Length: 219
Image (cartoon, rainbow, N blue to C red; front, side, top):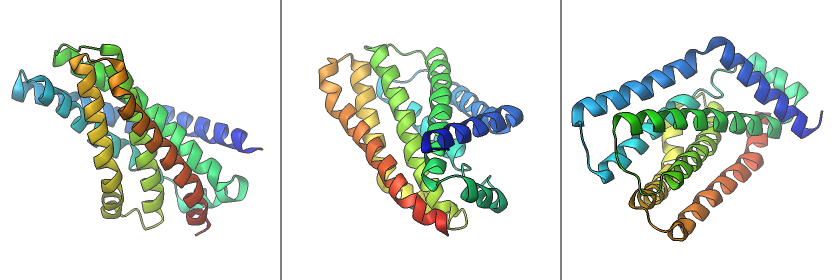
């Protein structure tokens, strides 16, 4: 099989396994819905800046919970089997694509639940929805790369936190600024710099993953 066929097969495998068990996705959805409900009971009503910040805090921790086990749930025997039949680039690309799909679905559910319970007028709903999708994709690429690195260090959660911090903080700053522009209803041209930065982060993260993961995979 060529690279694309390998990636397609691995993504379908992850989707089938997730569909059969549903434990992870159900747990994450429960976390998102319950967190939104608790925030609503605690605050009832918040100003737009707090509304925006709370949403991205919820998405950040939901992303960590969803992607943290991307590699740890794969046994050593299964990883050895993958090593013998597919390339390392196919493995990391498949994990990135699968986590992108997972995070986009999770983000859309979280956004609609959050905006329904915590009503807040959005100046540009389409731009905010775009920011949510782009942010979930960015979380998926960053945390998948870090999860792949930490899996080769005994799935050390501390290492994952340390490696994620330098990338996640700038990512969150840009996401909050982009979504704040959408809430204020500013002209979309104003947000092009933030969109360009987020796209660049995704491209760099995927490129680094493709370059670095094959060396980790050999170990």
